[in-house]
Length: 171
Length: 213
Image (cartoon, rainbow over all chains, first blue to last red; front, side):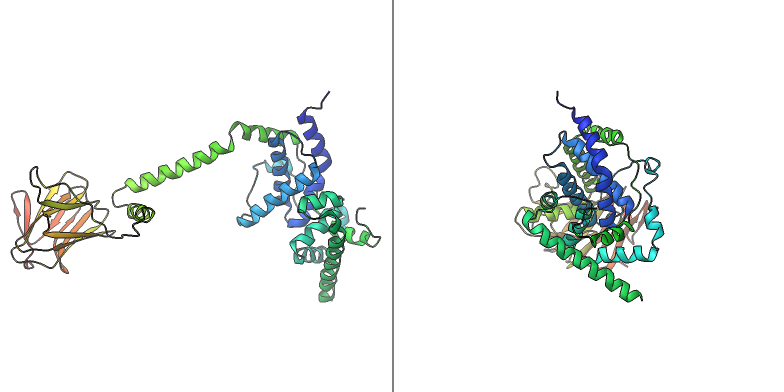
């Protein structure tokens, strides 16, 4: 017997929401925007009425499109949803315990390094860090799967160079 | 860990320093939101927006003296292929039944309208009447005057001597002034009339051949 779409949706949400949110949070540097984008992406999925073949890649593609639209419209802070903030009271930028251990200075250098990367490299690096497969990354970013490895290596180098440049500059 | 090489442990650790705690979101709430949207299809929301814009535009166009009206007229002129015509008079029907020689112009008075006569002619007169209408109407025998209409200015050029021009000014018009050249000869401001000529019957008769003092 086929699993109802609603149940499939809930299962996918449980498996993918945190991961998608974390990717968007790192990408945008704005936890509230990331929360809005991730939620809106799942609302769009429910509106679609069926799960796409490659659900993870679909979610990334939709989320990135929403993010581009938000940036293009100059509404980086605009609320895409009117979800009561009380429902998402843990969404504020409270650092994780690990983040709290490291100094805010390191965190700022990481943020600057991410922001300094080219968009495509940044997306590649952050998607891979979230465990997305080469195939999912290639689908989401419209790349040839065979070239993902090379591009990813380049993205890592770019991040390291920017981060170490930040570190040198701060000494 | 997900990155390929061992030293990527460090990279992953660095990336985690910028993480925030994920929000607590209920998928049922998102599903409910999606269902609510489905009940109002996107095209109807879009159509409602377009209808609202058209409605507001229509209201703005209909307001006497609205700046929207000349914009729309110019836009229509451009779309119609005639190019922009910033000053286009609107012809009026003949002054009276059977008077095929009459012509004129009718314009909204707006908040402040100035009627300017240029090229005063010997024996020419303006007969100014207050009306119950909503538009300022200027009428002269056909071929004896030409008209140009800007946003808050109506130009009347007399093309012959001894022309009598009839001007109907709505009582409701806030401010309408009549000038001959650069001299004001008549002004209606609210219910107040300022002019050097007396009321004769129901009209003010102002010579256009010379400037009254």
